[in-house]
Length: 84
Image (cartoon, rainbow, N blue to C red; front, side, top):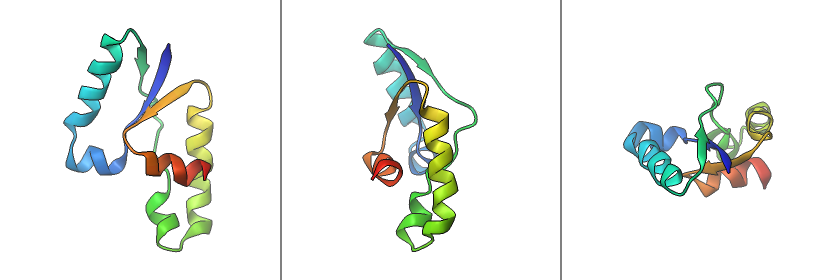
């Protein structure tokens, strides 16, 4: 399966090796992992602090970037922000 990997800003900042570990696990399971370089914040911090209008373009871009294939994320809350 082709999987686009989304690494959250939180994990990238505090636990940068998490993404590497996720890639290793997915590849061991036989998946082809891609990392879209254009990925950005999902907008969760903006949304949760009342800046919903500012969060919308980020969430929309997130959906556009990952719409082409299944995605894996290290944060369910990012997906909730985008799809919720």
